[in-house]
Length: 409
Image (tube, rainbow, N blue to C red; front, side, top):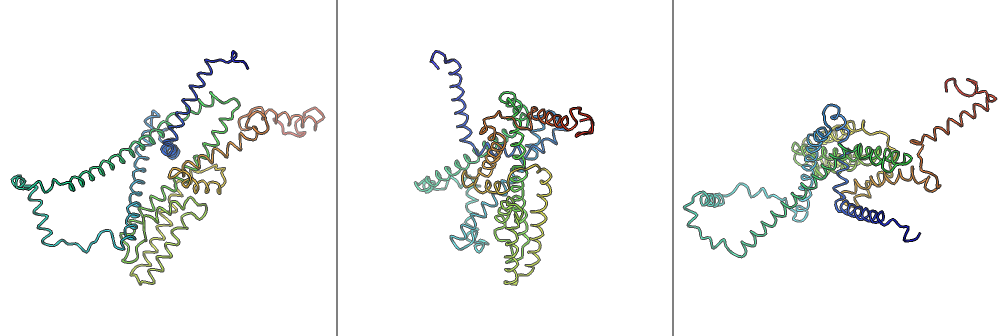
């Protein structure tokens, strides 16, 4: 093709489009964890939104109600559970390094001299006339200024971390909100703009069905189970007999939620061994009420942590066509490849690849038009034509009812 035949105006616009697409890809790549978690929130909220949408108008108010009355408190509860886990991890690490508890209760109560020193400092701060007698130069030293600057730096770092987390949370909720409110409009636009033979329609429906199953049925179940496990086991430890408590209760709850992603056995891989360990320890150490507490732990694990979340979420899981082993590998390899958000990103990639291979790839390899049977009316026409020809052949060309086909077909 000669250069004179090139539509330079159209080529320039294609160049602009390529630059914009590259910029958008860079933004999504830079915040991929935020985006995939926003997609997860959307799928986790959509069943709730569909119920609220029937009673609340307009869609914006229904989406906001679903997010801020149900999802946001749930996210805060999950965050609280994660703080418990992190705190317990730090305690275990310090105990392992020092061989002692983090808080030395043996130093309590305070001695009389310690109490008098504290009271003196309180009197100095509460009496303005006493402040004039303080030698402030002893406080204005290089070491104290450096300590104060370090404390301010740590405070600024904490504020920056909290602010960044709040921004990410806002973006996640915004993504989920607009997908809830405008998801149908976006899907219709994509179908009308790009679809020629129903390919995107069939591909999108298949992907949407399995993402709902993966996110709402599996990952949400794991998060809910882990949160319930952390809280229930931590509360149980409050009533544990001396020497018979649940070891690392918050970590056991977190591991139980993660193990729920494993088919069939699930979290039983966690709380069965823990219950056996607690029973053996109670018998070996002759712990008073130890076996009763082990029984309470087992019943709470089976009923509250294991059964209830499954009964609540299982009705929403249907139509999954993914191989169980492939899904389990996606859950396992995702965090190893991509980090914390890999447990959300890897299943998305799995669903996209599986349905691309199932719907699109066979026609691409055969060089035929991409027309999935589910949305291709010509396929139905061809089937009717074949049935009619077979009926005519069996009836001598008369096509009389009863000769090869029921009447009315």
